[in-house]
Amino acid sequence: MSEPSRGGELRARGPGDGTRARILEGAVHAVARHGLAKLAMSDVSDSAGVSRGTLYRYFPTREALLDALAEREAERFFERVLEAVRSAPEGEARLRAMVDHAIRAVRTHPALRRLRESDPALVLEGLRARLPALVDAFHEPLGAMLAQSAPVRSGAVTSRQLVEWMTRLFVSFYLFEDPSPEATPRALTALYRLLIGAGENP
Image (tube, rainbow, N blue to C red; front, top):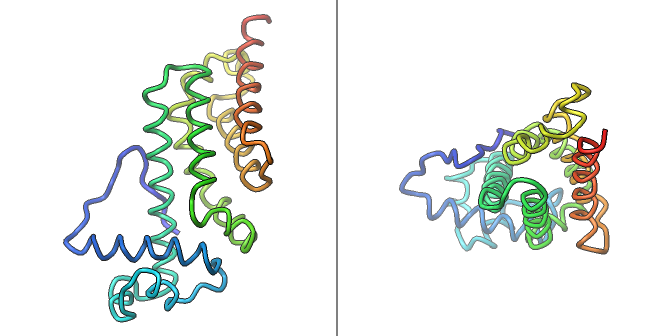
């Protein structure tokens, strides 16, 4: 799958964008109903309200459709999370804004929870392939503030390594959802406080 653009790096769209967007939105809802492994192109055309011919004109294969869908949804996720945190002050408030928005996006997305339940192997494969892109996206709002933590200042780790560990922790909360929606923000905020606190009290 192609890597999503991030931070507002949107590619130019052409005149057929409305139909293309309609197909991709229909694909999201078709995945939510049928899962990914059993998804048929006819499910997508029915959900999008377009003919099979129109669907194949935009996406000649199921793989091309799923690649485009994964790219669009990842791009949307990155942009919305970054937009949510850019207005938050650095420090704990920024981390909390990022985590709260990311959790809300996962919980309200029509297909993500269904995919985790119906196609866990495909979800793991996709997350593994996109982990570097996730780390890159989260490093933009978190890297500078984590650079002030004691482990980074001492040279034990880099800010990117810390962001990667926090990203892996966040992914684990998606894969193994806690019944309490406050669990993930509390865990990541506690980790941030521990790192910063260690810097204040060597």
